[in-house]
Length: 489
Image (tube, rainbow, N blue to C red):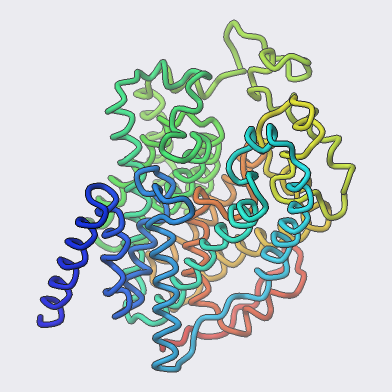
């Protein structure tokens, strides 16, 4: 109690000083950044929990007034720093990263950033402005595409250590569930406050409507699809009716938010993960109930959402994906045309690629044909940026992630709800693999946050032997070795 009173007095003094120096909104923002730090220094797990909640909403502009420095970044770095301080004062074991993440994922990304730096130097001012702030200078490019994305992996690693340092590991699912529901609630509030009707939001002209929240509608669709998969797999795994009701309510909120993104890729991802859920449960009654619920949802879904989901499959518009005119390609919204414009640049460096976000210096960008770094195809994005060699490494890493989630879920020491979450994120990855044909980025981004958080949880349950075993090249059908016990520290 004395410590709490002392901290409150200290924070009151800090906030008063900030108000006198800066005043208003800036003082409140800076105070929000400083306030949790003392609690994090006392127990780094406080920072881990706060960063889990903050990361999915870190792109929202209200939380990112300071360039490169937002609340989530500060929390991740503070939690990591507090962890190292704890280990310095009280030496002990810590969770190690599987070596596979270094040479199949992180190293290819940093090599691609190094290659990209060469090209950034040659960008014209006009092209740099068209492509975004990340191309304004070499330091901006390195920070934006090399350093900042790695904060998600740092957050995953600190989460893994927090789980290993705790007696009740299952409680870490609470902030993860909250982190899934919170951005959905904010998005729904933002849409209601905007006063825009469903017909307006579903139009092609409104595809950038949600970017004022910090992400494109398709990125929100991907994030909610993975979050939804985690929630529905947790429902049969929890033991109490209260927990199931809360999870069903949470999944319903996320489903509505995903529907209102009008992201067709998100719809596909959720259908894939939902079908996987029904099939994997192997329960006839559940399959029948799920089918009935799906029919009910289709019946009550507004026609505007149905029309958006079926764009290109009917109606008066033309849908010629081979046309040279973007407006004729209604089915893929111009993606096929975009792929045809960008693919010739692949032949310039087919083995190692042309660097992260290489579309910024493709021939199509230099000639003004395109004004985006998005290829709208995950697999082409990997090929363009890291080449054939990097493609093999990166894809094998994501295969490892999927297999590892399934393997950890089967461990006897993993709590049932956590096992359900691992199976859920694996299903979400399958949905993302299908969605990847129209959207997606392979380097760490906020819309992948739930994959990285669950990766952090999984490494806490992997033995050192299993992590070393992951270095070996394996085919899809070869089972991972299941040995090693989870050790509490």
